[in-house]
Image 1: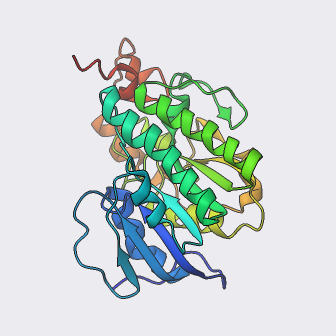
Image 2: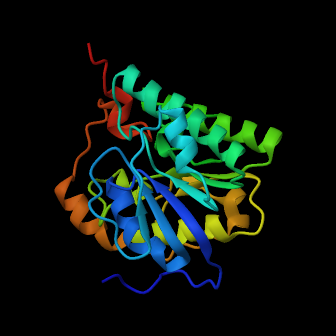
Image 3: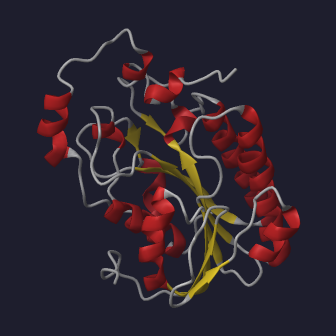
Length: 275
C-alpha cells in the first residue's frame, strides 16, 4: 500500500515512463508516481519483479537504440533516472550516460514525447567550494567522469529543446536519503517527500523550456540558490536541520586537508582513477 500523494494536482498523465526504476530513487518513485498517471511504465536492466496494478515493466538497455525507441512508444513524459549513478571507469559511463542519453532523446523526438525530467546531479558543479553559493547560471565544474557525463546530458537536453522543442527539467539531485549522512549533506540533502514534490512540479509546470533546478530540501546550510528554477513551482517543505545535532556529534571535526571537505562534490572529487 502506498501513501497519499504529497503534491496536490488534478493533472494526470496517461502513461509516464520511469527509467532506472530499480535504483534507490527509482524504487521510491515507483511507489509514488502511480498517483499521477493511469499507467507507469518501468524500465531498468536490473530485476524489477512483476508489474503491479497500473504498471508496465519493460526492461531495456539504454545503449540499445531500437529498444529505447520501443520503450518510449505511447509515452506522455519521461522521468529519466537510468544510467550509471556513481563515479566509475569511462566505458560504462560512456555507454549508459552518453550513448544511452542520446538514444533516449532521439527516441523522444521520433515518438513525439515533449517533456523529459533528466536526473542530473550536484556533481555537475562539484568543484565549487563549500564556502560558495551557486545558481543555475554559474558555469559547470564537473568533479569526475560521472559529473562530466551529466554536464553532457544537460547540454544535450538543451540542444533538443532548441532544435526540436522537447522540454526538459534538469534535476541536479543533491543527496536524497531518509536522512543526511554527514555534514556535507546538511546542505545537499533532499527528503523523499521533497523529491516527489520536485518531480511532480517539473512534470506539471505549464511551460519549462530548458530549466535547471537543484534537488534539495529547504536546508539552513546552503550551497545552491534555486532562484532561476522558481518558475517550476517547487516548494520544499522539509529540512536537514532536525538532523544537525546527530550529524555534527558523529562528525565533530573535519579534516580540511581532505578535498572532500573543501569542495561541494564531496568524495567524488577524489574518486578514481580505476586502473
